[in-house]
Image (cartoon, rainbow, N blue to C red; front, side, top):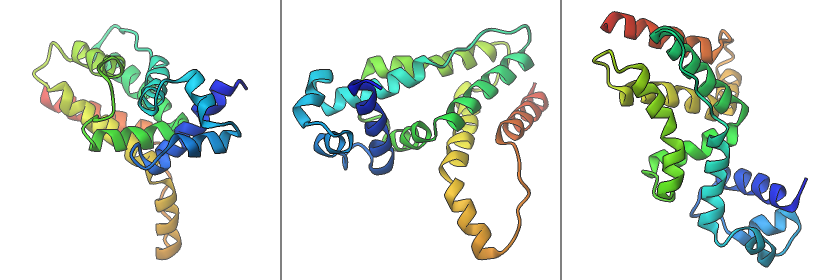
Length: 184
């Protein structure tokens, strides 16, 4: 793994755990085993590093138009579900950034992220449904699910209750498609 890749991996872990404000480049450098100036070789600033993480992760999201609204929604939900479940630190960091009104994200980073809403808007254009509402339901479901894995384990221990396991992606899809069918 290259030094840049190591920086990105550790930076994502630390940003996800502590947030943007509580993370410093010295800590990232120490975790990677390099000096702070070595980070500046790859990134001009903490903010550039932070935005690079988002851009690189969200670039990997690809949506392809399908034949029907239902197929588009399934593709959208399963693509986002896989993305957040496979990237729990980005789910955690994205939640922090959303709750902070994207204060630390540059316009070019937001442009990369908005391809999610563009695809959903295009898919829903023949309906009267608000894509921002639908997206909020979907993304909050996945990020909350991912961010509460440890909490759910603790709750099971405390309550001594066995909760039925479920596939979050299937549940989100069924919930959203049922809602949309009822509305159109």
